[in-house]
Each structure stands twice: as C-alpha cells, then as structure tokens.
Length: 319
Image 1: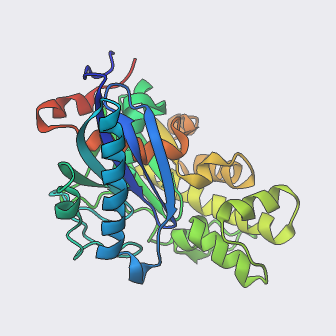
Image 2: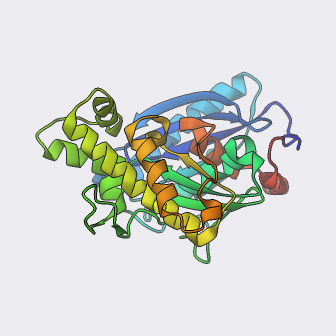
C-alpha cells in the first residue's frame, strides 16, 4: 500500500509528553520522517500545568519558524499525552501530567491547529502506518515505559473505546507471577513500569534515575537488579497474555523505553505472555518490539494532526 500522498514541504509538529521526558520535533507528513527532535525532562507533577505547556509552545513556535525558513509549511501540532484522553481530545486524568485545566489545546492552537491524543494510541497509529504493525490487519500495541498501557488496532485505526479509556493495562492486579510460585497480587505499573522499577531498586539501597540503568545492571549480573527486572518482565508478560486472551489479536507489538532493551526484562515478558495465553493456537503469535523505537509516539502524535480533509489517510499503512 502506498504512503499517504502529501506535498513534501508539509511538516507536522509532534510532541510526545511522557512521564519522565518529553520529545518535540518536526515530522514530514509525506513519510513520517523525523526532521528534528529535541528532548526535555517532564517536570514533576506539580509543575506540569500551564507553565509547562507555555514552555512547549515556545519550542513548537521555534520549530515552526525554523522549518518555514527552509520552505516547510506547518500543517498542525499533534500531542501524545501519557494520560487518559477522551474522544474529544481533552485530557481526562492527571496521574503524571496535569493538563486537565491547562488549556493546552487552545495554547498550542495559537501556533497551528492542535490535536491531543493518548500516547499509546498515537504510538499504535504510527506502528500501523510505517512500523511493525503494517503487516497485520489487527494487532495489540502495548507500551512499557514509565507506565504500562495498551491499544487495540483494527485496519490501521486505534480503537479508543466508548469514552477514550480503552488503554488501561497497568493499574489492575496481576496474579500468579511470583517467582516462587506463590499466588501474589501486584499493581502492574508499580512492578513492570519504569517508575516502579526505579522505585523498587532504589528502595533496596541503590540510587539510579532510569529503569534502563536497572536493566543494564541486571545484564551485568547485579542480583537485586536481576530479580527486579525478571519480576517486572513477568508482570508485564502476564498483562500481555491477558490482553491476548481478551481480544485475540494477530500479533502484539510492544513499544516504550523498556521494550527497546533486549535482555532479562524483555525475555521474561515474552515467556510469561506465552505461558498466560490460554488458547494454544495463539501461544506462538508474533510478539514484536516496536519498529519505530522511541519515536513511535512522536510520529503518531504528528500523524494525529493531519488536516481534517486528509484524515482518511490515517488508515493507510506502508506496504
């Protein structure tokens, strides 16, 4: 299938607001190429309101001006947000980034037309368009980053649910994944998410800032890091397996920072997912790391901002 046909000079601004860091950059509308990307830390929850939005507006304006000087037209701003986002594009939760009262869309729209989307749906859209999802009619996209979330994609279109909340995977209990075989219950994000991994490791007397540091130490033989990475992977895998049992996708594509690290965490997740899948015919389904890596949500956010007259192109996938 051909890529969406847009003038090469059309650029979209993507903003991926994550729990620990935020990426912002220009994305070519024709092929999804990231033209320019800058990464800043996402501030603590108390500071993620209007002042943070205004800071990002300054950055977006600078990107638009620099692109215009090179002959690129800015077609819109797409924001992927690590929160619930309702069907009208309004932030509907404030667990990590509090934008429910920040008037973010209105502020970004002073620069270019703006759309806000949940980060997992944005990333899933990008993977369906030009990532690992383009080979499948229906797939589950799972994000393993600071938090844990998921999205079901059919014919290239992420399914948002009746209220825009069909993405929660990390806030319910995961059972029967204790390494000793005991029945245990965990809030998945607190064990399998990046923030939880860092908190558990530091509680054992260490001091790291990134979950990837913990995973790297696990690969180097650190006992505490190995146990935390293995259990985190098992909890993530139990969630993936449960998701497969519920929606029966052709494949599972896993993105987010933790999925980019091919080690103990990842292999524990895949092993536990296959052990959790009830239908024998589905146990060998593809479980794939996202093809666009850390840029999935940024590209998907930009794609969400396509002008309304080109919205049908969102269903297209690269062939």
